[in-house]
Image 1 (tube, one colour):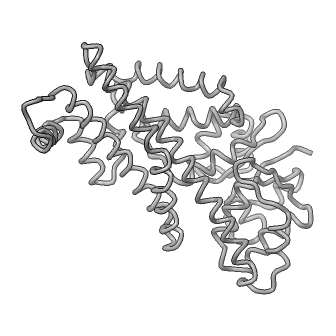
Image 2: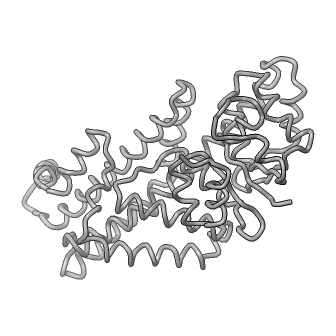
Image 3: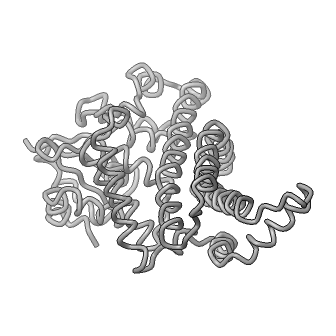
Amino acid sequence: MQKLIIDTNIYYSLVGISENLKVNKDSFLNFDKYITSATLIECIIKYRNDLSTLKKIIKPLMENEYQLISIGYVPIDNEQLNQIYLANNIDDIKMTINKILELKILKESEFARWFLYVIMPIAFDILSEIENYKFDDETKMKDFQKYIYSLFSGNIEFILDKFINKLQDGYENNDPQKSFSDEFYNIMYMTFFIYLSNYYQIKEFDSSLKPAELGIKIREYIEKDKFYKLVKSNNENNKNPFSFFAKKKYEEKFIKSLELLIIELTDSFYHKKLSVSAIKFIEKKIYKIFTSKSKLYKNDIFDLLITLSLEPNIYKLVSLDKKYITIIKEIDQKSFELIEELGLQS
């Protein structure tokens, strides 16, 4: 039988947690059905306070109706599943659930930081080449590049901790998506601000001024900067700061930078865990961020982790999520055709 990876919302319908009119259970009878550990963790955390629903989630796996594909970044072991499935009281498994939640928050935070570290250098390249945030003087340019490098290398743990703390608050208050978006775009905004601060500190340096006076002067230059004004406005109005780059004049430079990134992801030993499908997902997501004013959402991270499991010659992947389906269409046409055949697309 054909091997089919089931996305989270379809799984909810098939195991009787929720109902969706698009999901016809009979249509899935003739498939070997799989879910990923990313999907399973999503389900467990969503219903972490409801023991009966948690048992519904795990039962099809215990009875081998579904097979589990373990994603290396977000593994879940049989002992944890057994503890949940055999529990008599939700309090008995609080520690197990908390460990799973800690893993989810950590991976969402790590990938949020990773996306930030990938897309910001592309933005800086565009600003340097097209908007002339650079220096003809070689010494000044090297100093500027050092500032940019230290901006990332010196804040690796700081940025990770900010995401973790914000997401912990978000899950506690049952609104992790808002917490994620607020923090991601706030860090992005502050990174642009520091980038411009470094630029004007070099460009307008005046040895006759005291540090405090120079700081005031730099702030004045930044406040007048057209790029900063737009980024600040977008941040204040909860819009994607990258909407600035959705212009024809940036397209050629952006495409070149994106192509170099994809080559690095494909060839780098560090990124060998990324499947071809996952790299395509990253490429499509970054393209939409820069060209279509699309945002990065928390759910995109676990969609990426689910996509890691997609090997087109072995599996097909189906989803109900419109945005995810759009990317699936570009990654694996056969999976998209099956989504249409099963009537899962609006």
